[in-house]
Amino acid sequence: MLKQLINPSPEQYCDTPEAFLKSLAEPTMIYIDGERSDRTRAVVTLLHGNEPSGIQALHRWLLTEKKPGFNLLCFIPSIPAALLEPLFRNRVYPGQRDMNRCFFPPYTDIPGRVAEEIVELLDHYQPECILDIHNTSGSSPDFGVVTYESEAHEALVSLFCDRLVITDLRMGALMERSTRRCPVVTIECGGAQDSGSSDVAWKGLQKYLYSDDVFVLQPGHHLDLYRHPVRLEFKQNTTIAFAESYVLGTDITVPTGLDRFNFGAVAAGTLIGWLGSEQAREQIKVLNAEGEDVFAEFFGIKGNQLYTVQELKLFMITTRPDIALGDCLLYAAKEQEHEVLDT
View 1 (cartoon, rainbow, N blue to C red):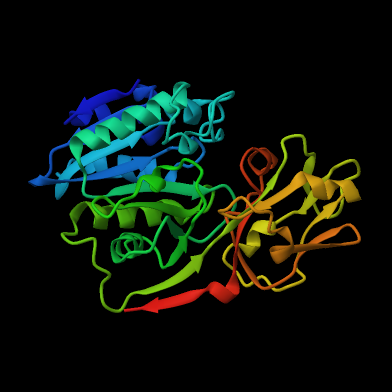
View 2 (cartoon, one colour):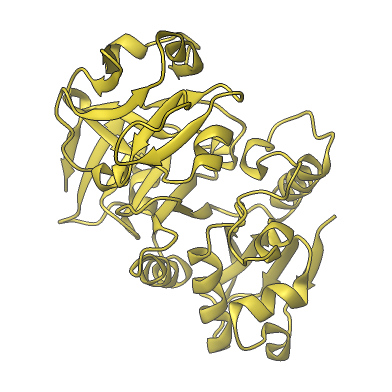
């Protein structure tokens, strides 16, 4: 399933990320010998075809023709989705599962078999850490996500940003394979359309490729920690719109520009959307890690308005109806659980 390039020649990199992806055409693994042959680090990017910052940073680095400080193992899985016109628009290839929900059995479909091969190659090469680079679909600051707290996770995320979400949600994502021997971190570099996102990916990637110790949080670093996030999801048959006011005939209308709240202070009583009927509440799911519906802890309904019931930190708010329905509208964490870590 995976095309494998071992120490590719510079001519294979092409002039632009787009041309490079077209030359690859299919899910690809790249391995490059480093200055130190006894250690290997892994980078995964483009798990979602609409998140270009990681491949832009990786391609920019490849064009430098420099050796990494350590052996480098790269995976670029969702190339077919990214290459659909318009480029970098499709999160997944039509009709297929989200690649970042496929890293645990069963591996029965195409994304599952690609994920299984990535896992097998990671087991073969034994990297000391794995970096998974993403973008959000709405405008957003940069942040990291990990599945449990440790200094190694915090230090890896701090190469890129100063916000960290510790999630106990389990959906089959690559970061859920994190271990103390090989920590895995997800980096959300900012919105896919935000001008600074590729720069975040580029600067952080260089640190990752050349810093000797990426497992110790350096003195003077600041991290905002957020725990136990939940997802606001909709059932598949929900009708949704993004507009300045309620759109007749929809189950829910989301205010245009809701993504302005990404990692901002969201007070109790903040409008999240307008519902089309009392029955529209049944289309909304807010589940915690135990699968319990915790809607009432985070949101309420007054009239036809959906609003927050306590101070929250919202993140990964999307402005695309297809992603809101196919994945989720947003994540939310309680501000009362926010902790600041200063070294």
